Length: 466
Image (cartoon, rainbow, N blue to C red; front, side):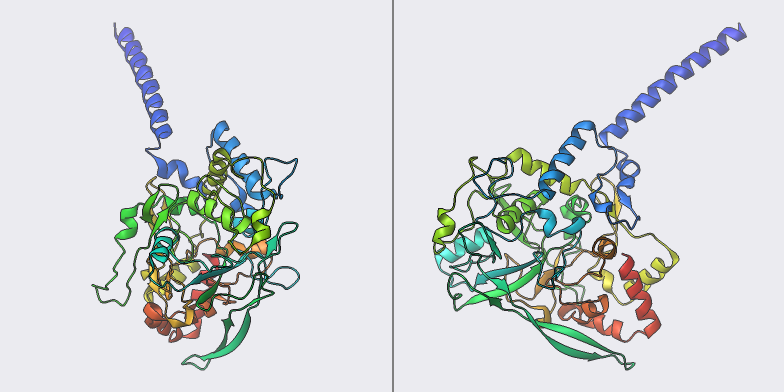
């Protein structure tokens, strides 16, 4: 009798164990334990190919989609007409023929190419001051700005056969010396923007010219997965807590949803989602049309551009391929720094002087993944030194989105040289970038300058590893 009871208990336990295992499998499949299942997607491996790798646990179908997106991201597009119908439609005006040209290794772009010229990662941006007309207000509602009449909202440094490029970058630099309280001297490079070899006439008298360097794509999918509520809880537009920091959200029109959304990406947070970013860059940087940007970037004054041959398909990038590129950008491994003793010491100094008020070190995504992007995704007034006069939706000329710091540690691994920092690549070091901080960050910059040199060095070392 006792033996029968023991057998029955073992049988029931076996059934219960099997049921529990099946339940756990179902729970993991639904993503309820995403912290554990997705933590492998964050890596401390400083490898030059890390940002090219897919996240963990993709199904065969998902992996195929990832590889499809990767191919369209990396393999060059060609001008129409072409036998390669899947990849024709480049231009007529463009800056680069691949996404990877501006984002080498999916990291941050370089200021200069191997020949010492400004690289394709540096994009000249144009707009004009609004005259408050009905036409200008309509443009601002959809684009956030008023494009320059002859050249549009961005300069293309290349053109297909028979179509002249628009212009070339002509930046020069003025040296400015900064002296620390302890006597250390550093030199900043103040850029003076210009364009040379203008092909379509002079610029409008009210033109606003600025330059933008392609940012790193590290963790861009995770940044999209931060909840709107978690971003907005750090907003303090009118500095009600009197700490000198006035984070402000930007709201931009999304061609994807056809409505105004919270801005998360680009230097002034005027892009609302990863798909929005992919479609916008495809159109402005490569002249590729999608259902969201159905027209080439030719202006009415660029006759040869408008006459250039078109691809056979209605859109250069089909919806399936756009979705695949977006998926590839979202579903890559993300670099995050190893929490060493030196890291923790540098983070303590980082927080001590207040850098973390904007460069927030910790978020938990909607999927339950803890990340350290060092950004609040909000706009901040950075003062006249960094001002470019260009407004984009709610962002004024002095306001910039807090740049995420994570992933910059990979730049030297990918490119063999240190990253040029800030929106236009003017800063050669993290210290130079800090010294350009004014406006809301003025007091924090002064706190950094007043640190003893050993602490400054520890902080800079920390930033190089983030």
